[in-house]
Image (tube, rainbow, N blue to C red; front, side):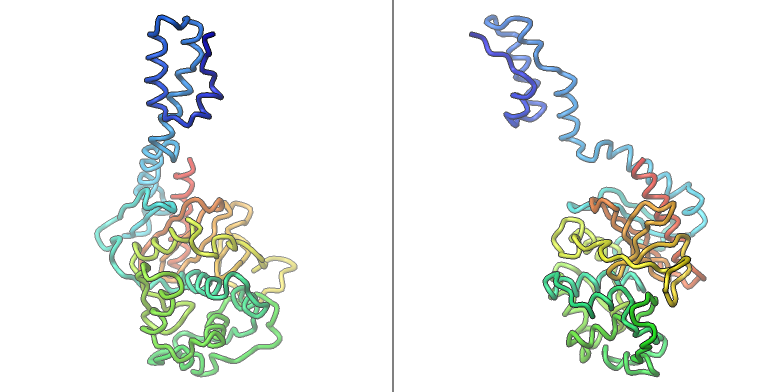
Length: 343
């Protein structure tokens, strides 16, 4: 009895598209097999499988072209000046480029508040994903320590010394339980975790110890919420570890969201944002009316990293400029790149 190759049986065999096509041709030429059996394998389905194996991102060439065009031609990016951009997944970089010649993948930059996502990942990893109520409040900026001025940290050599300057460590009890965007929450949390005596070199070493020695992350100042200095390539390596699920914060992105502005929200202070987003563990959830749900951590000087809402890809806009609301321009460009990528 001749047995035909049904599509289900073919898929269950786990053969590649190319092998299936070769096998289909061999059986079609066999004199013992009828034409009806030879036609049982839908060649279009086999060709689709072979294409998907060669292009797991379902149109990677098209996506690359679309996002490169957006980086060059979209109004939000065109008006921003020089910058480096990158999009990737847990396996590596999928697309990247530079506008102008000032920035590159390997040029270290001060990332300002993009430091916050790295510190959140450190804390979550350090405690094995089991945050205490106080740690959760600190990472959601509801801890009440919102009197912190980073300029007062000038020449402070340790995490604790930075917190002790000019009232940086003061508690505003009436702000506890309410979102208040400020670096004091993180700085105070760092001291409770035993990081107070660390200078910027010791802080970098401790973060690498917990998140992985493969991450080339440094600090320009011992400020855990804003002192990180890293190249786009180094920061992207951190994002890849998150996307790949190799850091526990992967499963906590967007968790325990708190309101940051709008009617009925008890927030104390929030930065200027284009949407009423929520805040999670040291990162924003871009879930406003026109948002796509991405998780982001924009820095004041224009460094803007994100992880897509489905946690499958990451991206970043890298630049370092002292311009009013530089982070807003980078966010607009990054959002344009995400739209181009998703098609």
